[in-house]
Length: 113
Length: 116
Image (cartoon, rainbow over all chains, first blue to last red):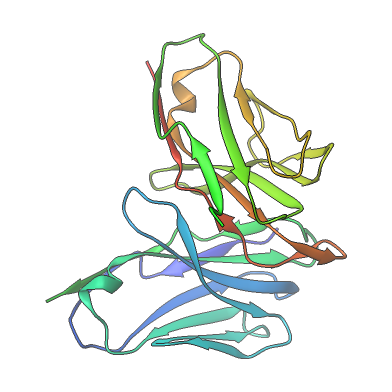
């Protein structure tokens, strides 16, 4: 059974720092991995989607990497800003359950001015 | 495009009451989903649909029903509300190119439901 874990659960950094959020999954047979952002009281916004055949995806100051063999993904945020404060969620679609996302619990990020 | 819209935004129900949470998407997505999100528990899939007329259970379907008569709409029905159904409910949609693998999911803003 696929399980997704995100570490740390919470992170507080000063503005301008580069930071890394971690996501691990137990079954390496995945179709894709996605990173989402959730602002308090709001819905989820997709940030990056990495197909199983890809190693990384970039969007602006965000870079997500995928290492299927080790069951890990990282979300790198460059030059963090207070507006980056949110909860970041990782989710995978497994080869054995290809219609459903399996979600991590998220990392709550606070970027302090 | 409005994307995924949900109504209502907030609702308080008494135990035993029923209600329907509405969800509509205008992106012509074939897949639609209902999730609930509880503090510290992450997102749990309630029901999903891969096309009009086709629905299937997710992880936590008990106490809920769905229908998908059109591509655009995917309402979620609570028949006998219980305090355990107090949660935030999110509807999402995505497009599948085939073989069941889908693109990213687009989420609505959520419905905050309290059952007293």
